[in-house]
Image 1 (cartoon, rainbow, N blue to C red):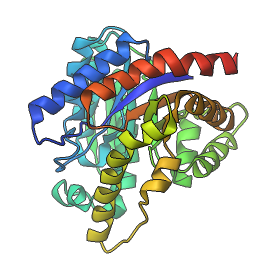
Image 2: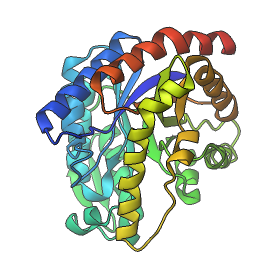
Image 3: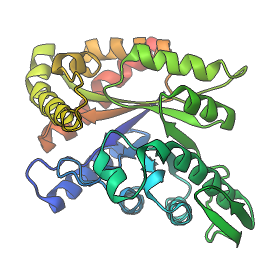
Length: 326
């Protein structure tokens, strides 16, 4: 099980420069304390999550790190030109010396994205899969001719080509058809922070049912905060979780699609508690799901505490996990 940090570029004080600098420091600290991965989310038109130019951010992170693998969680292909994505991803892979992990998704319940990028919600899945097919061919074939419902190219050669062959690829989904597609292609699966473990178990089982030895290489994101006691961890993390729940509830209500975002339910699906408690919980999750990567999202708006939470995981939680799984 690899450990990573999950970056959503929160901007609580509405200062973009401070936001970008803080997330860069978080990634660099993750590398310093032995985390193997750092993943960046893509969001648009949101002052609370300012990571729209995900590949630009990852390119910058490639230049200020040397060891940690860098992942997109995830590129929203329905809103992008796949040729440009292929060029950018290949460039990052070269700049990072082959440290890039390519995660893609169709985009969540944010209608402004579909509206302003002119991608109808009921077409976004088909656009995403067609774009991914074209990108894969551009990565690995010398010259590509492609005629799809949404994209066409004629005798096109990608320059540069990525260093990795293949580039590790993930799809963020729990939709049965997309899970089956990922399994047949050998892509990994990504699961979001609020997703219930029981639902993720179903996704993993469906993936593995496609064939003997099918490995979802599951990358699981979780809100995370640890302290000496559960009470101390909750005191710091709960305001962050409550703010997230309020924001998501507002997004769904604006679409006349009420959804439950109970902070206590989110806490139960998160990694928040004492060092010993979290080590035991992570071991249990790993045994149930067979994690490829665990991606930690510090549940605090305080940068000093967020950095310290990575130190605590490396020094006080990870050794317990490794001992239990040895």
